[in-house]
Length: 138
Image (cartoon, rainbow, N blue to C red; front, side, top):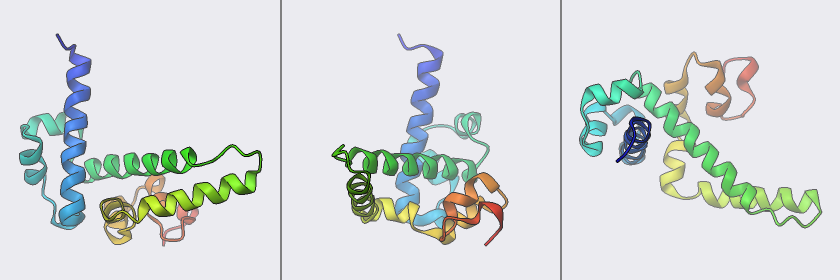
């Protein structure tokens, strides 16, 4: 029998998977929480137990995808002993990863990300097209 912690983790993962699909297909602006709820087959209360709203869900999806892309890039390093070769391998792997339309729809669609993260200095670094806006706003 699943513990409460396992059920919470499963519900959260289910919400994130459903939200990721919705944001990929419809974008941030056109995704409604009701779409996420329907796809995840959960109640509104269950979603709000884990997230404060659509922006919070989007941030979790975005951060998760950033982490996946970094793991993918790091997994491509060959450990050749040459830091330059490892850097080149990681960069090529990351670029190939974000060419996937499902990934690019969330990670590269900067206007939606910027709108979702407006006012959040921690996330603005991720959403900035130049990647260096943590000290100022674009």
